[in-house]
Length: 222
Image (cartoon, rainbow, N blue to C red; front, side, top):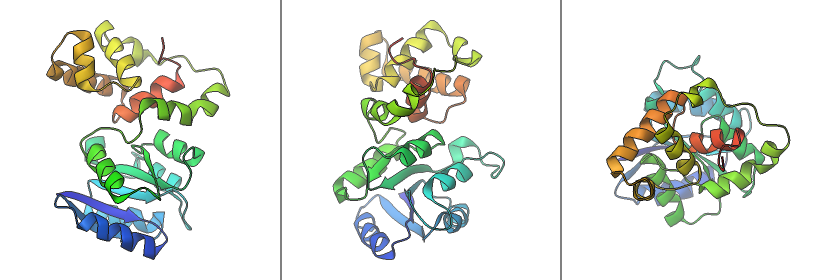
């Protein structure tokens, strides 16, 4: 079962989403919260797999909640033990959602998405994939990326092997493991191992963060 916490200040909205999720054979809503501060307490108590988090709420909004959730000073949990976060927003190109992704969220879903799309997004994120395609993330970050010159890649990037750097760029472009395996003439399990090594060396949490890192340092087309 995928254990989910719903965070939104509109109780009626939470109720509708809960009905849709509880109808799934592989999903269970284990907690709800009406603001970010309450959400952190619920998340700590229930240890969900996925959090659906409204970006705009009173007391503590979605961005601050994501920042607090992934703050190493707040929790002793390892990155792999933290829940995946899907931000809920009403705008397709929401800069607040972009900020939340930079701080650790795995993507965003529009609040008027269909139940089928939402449940598919939850399953994808739970499996370690992204909600947004790489080109969509690139469009989301375009304004911020072009506003200032890119910082040089950290030394950790130069520690990647030539093969890992090639895989890094393909992940950043949105290719799946199977597509990368076909292009690089290796097995899919080899690609999975290389992606895991890249995440460890760059201290990144998931494939979304690889895309963010690549766009921030202008490494996508390099």
